[in-house]
Image 1 (cartoon, each protein chain N blue to C red):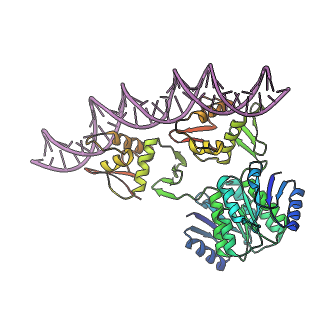
Image 2: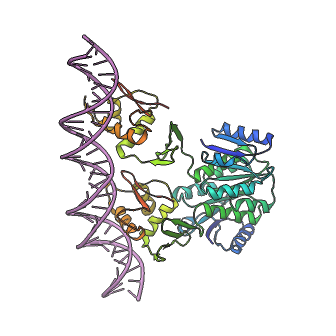
Image 3: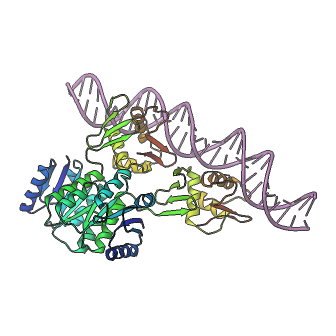
Length: 222
Length: 222
DNA sequence: AGTATTGGTTAATATAGAGTTAAGATTATG
DNA sequence: CATAATCTTAACTCTATATTAACCAATACT
């Protein structure tokens, strides 16, 4: 179902959680500390983070992850039930579950996050397109043909889908996809938008999927 | 901060929750039953739903709301702590909080949902217009249509919104938007005001949003 | 009422921002 | 290592928007 990155130092609970989530069809990567988190982030759909870790605490790690990857859902797991901890956790994370908990509740909350962040196999319909969000298969359901995107096209379109209905500035888009600052006047993004439209739009000259917001950027609406 | 629709039949807890959320700056509409929910949905940012209600139960109501309004966050509130209830609730809702709970936790979870669903921008109402200040989306809430402004129109209107109720001279406006000195007798600003009125006003000949202050300039009042 | 003054409207022209294309650079693939 | 696919750059075209200017309407003043 989803690729879960799980950071937990305790052997016991770590095995138990990993087992439970694996049973439900998720692919779990369990790290014993927050050290090598960074390299795994690009290849996961959700982070489960224990608060009590040796060395750097879960809150700091969570905040850093959220800063770098705002579209990656984070679920905090903790034995600390104090209201201050919950409020602190929820200030950046997307859910906070206190130990002990029932594995079904964890699984249900994982599902909520995947649903909300468009990371499960939801089927999204935009005009003449049917998009399987999990594996990003795009089908033109009027002709039945599948649309294959190249790497960059895929990343850009995914960024749009994660921010449906929002007006995205060229800066936001460029920085979100390339991960480096946008230089005013650069046409690279535009060229990609053009080829994307060529593939996605019925009539690329009158785009309906990716609309232009002149002076600002672009938008994809549901 | 946000417009919360709260459905709860118990007097005691209803008052307490309403008070707590109001204290934190939210606008709470408290309904004692799920009957007249439908008409309020269009004008709220988040739904808090009690599970135990006389008549139709909270789960059914929640599912129906989610089906019609998938982008409206729902937080379930319940005295039922059984895992089956939680799983059932989380199958459609976006969070599930069991009673008793700390008001700070409810508030924190409300914040998480508003953040995730992008509903935490300020909303300003001027006559028939609803303005989402964060992303500057302007909607005519009588027709439901979105109003798209061009760059200059956008800048001018933003200047008005930052100086609500103030009479702005043409000098002030011009210098505020263009950043260069206003030349007496220049009609550029006026032409833009005209096109702005064309888009914003119900009847552009009798402007209600942007009023003319003869001999001085213009004003937008709340 | 007639005239001056200030605001409003319209259409033309100019400009900036977006779209297009193709060639060259880079990266992936057999 | 060669070839193909994809990405970036840059010159050029097109179009929405901004500005200008000429004309029209409303209000204020004598």
